[in-house]
Length: 220
Image (cartoon, rainbow, N blue to C red; front, side, top):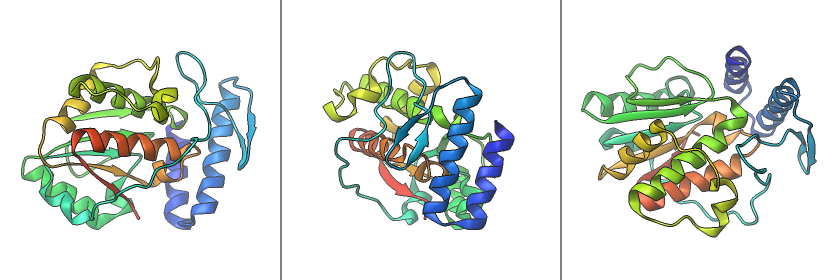
C-alpha cells in the first residue's frame, strides 16, 4: 500500500491537474477496496468502494457543503501547533514546508495524518499513518476527540461520519495539541484535496478549526 500511495503522490506532482488526480485517486481506492474484498458501489463521479468503518457506512456525498475560510500560508511560521492532513508538504509546497520547519525550530508541535510515512525535515510530535480509504475515519476520530476535550457537541451534518468511530490515544493527543495552543493551523494537502471523499475531509477540518480556534490552509 505504501508503494502504491507513493506512486500516487509522484503522479500528483507530475500532473497537478485536479480532475486527473481525482480519477487516479478513484482508481486507487477501487483497487484497495477490491483487494480488501469490498464490493464497489457506483457514485456520480465513478466507481468507489465504500469506506470501511467499525459500524455502518459513511455517506459518500455531503448533504450540503459549507463555505470554507482559508487563512494565508504566511501564518504557518508563527504557529504553535500544526496538523498536516494528507500532505507531503516538503515536496508539494516547499516554501510552506520551510515555514513549517521554521515554526518547528521555534518550538511548534507538528502532527500528521497521512497515507504514507513521508520523510520530513522536521520531527513530528504525533502521527497517524493510515490507508487512503481510512483517512476520513481517522479525521472523524480526531474530530470526536476535539469534541471531548473542548466539551463541544458535534454538528448534525457531521454525525454520520463521527458516530461510532474509535478514538485512540494519538487522536486525543492531536486534539489536545490543537485545542491547547493559541495559534494553531490545520493544513490539507494534495492527498486530501484529491481524495475520493475530499468533501468530508474539508468539512471535518473546517469544524475542527472552528472549535479549536485553529486556522485552515490548503496546499495549492
